[in-house]
Image 1 (cartoon, rainbow, N blue to C red):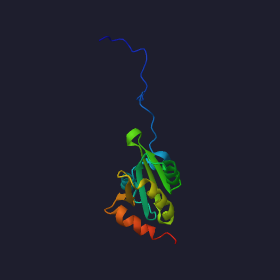
Image 2 (image 1 turned 45 degrees about the vertical axis):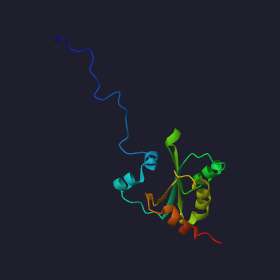
Image 3 (image 1 turned 30 degrees about the vertical axis):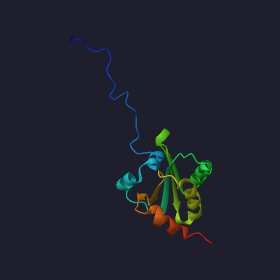
Image 4 (image 1 turned 180 degrees about the vertical axis):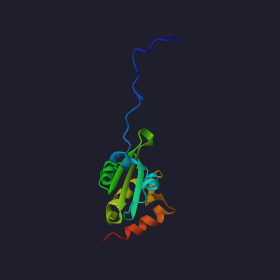
Length: 137
């Protein structure tokens, strides 16, 4: 080891690490898992909701299903390739659009029905038919 004086002094920052903001952005908060968001920030008051989570399907009306999903109260698309999922949340006032979307994607076993973001027993067999009672005749 030599006793020479260094020719330059390193900066007091940790380059090449990214400069990350201390607070999450609005986009990061929107993409956060609902359970994690509730644990970090507390429960958000919102009305009763039913969410359909479904993959890309080989059905003739799938474009119409995506159109209905995008018109829902909250739409999110996650994953890529075979793990790609579409998530559409509906309030009880959107019962007609929920029914229309479920008629297209509900036949697939991979379609999930969540009640207030939670998997609930008999969601397809009990909860959805109860919501159909809200449809005007």
